[in-house]
Length: 238
Length: 301
Ligand SMILES: Nc1ncnc2c1ncn2[C@@H]1O[C@H](COP(=O)(O)OP(=O)(O)OP(=O)(O)O)[C@@H](O)[C@H]1O
Ligand SMILES: [Mg+2]
Image (cartoon, rainbow over all chains, first blue to last red; front, side, top):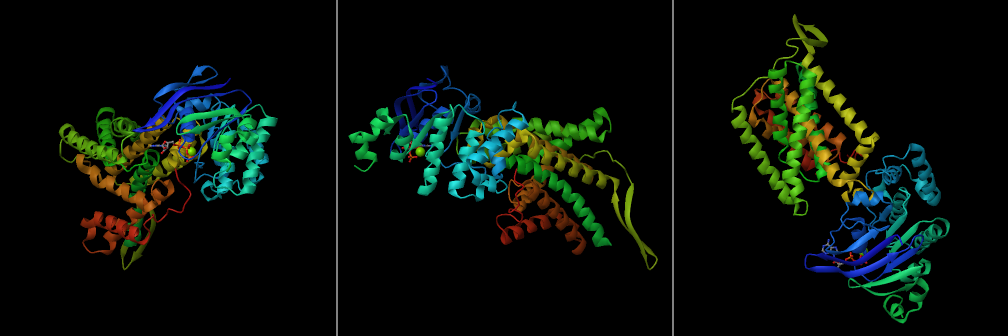
């Protein structure tokens, strides 16, 4: 098991966003976290990345407690977080945005950076065509690709994606999910995927958790959840 | 010829404003807030050189270095007091804290340095670089740069190029740019946002310190209250340049310098209104293009 969250509680002032959730992710798995608006999905990822103050509970990675670590340390442990809303650097070119993905790895050489760039361009040929274009002028789908590419530039062990399909055309969503199953089948990377698009997410995931009002209400393999009565009612339209 | 000479003077003076503005833009970029302490940073830079000259003698380059270091260190204090403590508070709290800090530094400076005008040593006194010369009706006219002006322009150009290279070519520079464009994204790619902000603030203040020395040398006078107008001009230049845009800030600074000196050239007995021209220019610029005259450029920090 590489990531283990135990009894995580996060409050924003009087609002409680997470009420003691526990999640485990094994190496090489694709785990998805599904749930409606405001369920606490984004908050979970922000807590793992060290961007939100947690009130109680522990988050450990490879057995090391990281609930009090700064976000830059957490990235160095091999975790990449592709945020909801993408957060592309608007005034950097596509290529500079990608390079930013490994700006914290002070030891890697230029050749490695070039290799990784080539990998992302192979994954997303559209980014290669636009590598000189400013990040802020890309379309939503292109920005999402860039955000994922930037996350992969650090060659992370655990890739966390926050609603990668949000606001994208079905054809682009298909592309993104193909990419995720590619990562699952062809690399040993681990993926923690947040989605509202439960069918697609459970289709690609090994396991899933259902989050509701800050609590895990259900968990199981992707297959199980996909056929669960309650999940079908709540997220898959009956 | 007189107008041309004023244009040259304007470019020179404008380059000092440009340096102030570049530092300000860098700070605005990483901190994400306007600061009201910058004028005092400029003043402290100038005074650090004053005492440097007294203690260590007249070495111009080392005095600039001293101004950079002193202003940068004060920048750390400003950062700890005004920004770091209020990271989670509403943004205007930091802003007000910088106003308080500005008053504190200014008054402390009056107490420590005395409230009177002081002079800096004269460098290259009376030495000119003649660019053009002509004689009309037996009157000889010259277009010239003083050596001091040359030194000012060269210093500003060298520092601007150095900063641009630093921001674009080094990993630390890339981190500064990341923080100034999107703090959250910067954190997510593993940048230590806190330290990077501190560093950007220090470098920005350091530039302000050097600009303060150049300003003091140029007018050959420094006074603890000089920061007010200087800080406002830096701010104006940055606004004209489109906030947090380094190239724009530089151009904004130079245009303010030119406007001031041309105002003096064209308006009879106009030299007392130098600052009026600058701020009038700001207002006109804002009316014409509220987002900053040069905001389309991509030279953001
Ligand atoms: N910065 C914040 N300040 C106050 N409340 C917040 C903040 N961020 C999130 N919340 C609240 O915490 C709860 C969980 O939010 P979160 O963003 O984690 O939901 P989510 O599952 O990602 O939802 P969505 O699918 O809409 O993105 C919500 O009720 C939200 O209003
Ligand atoms: Mg969310």
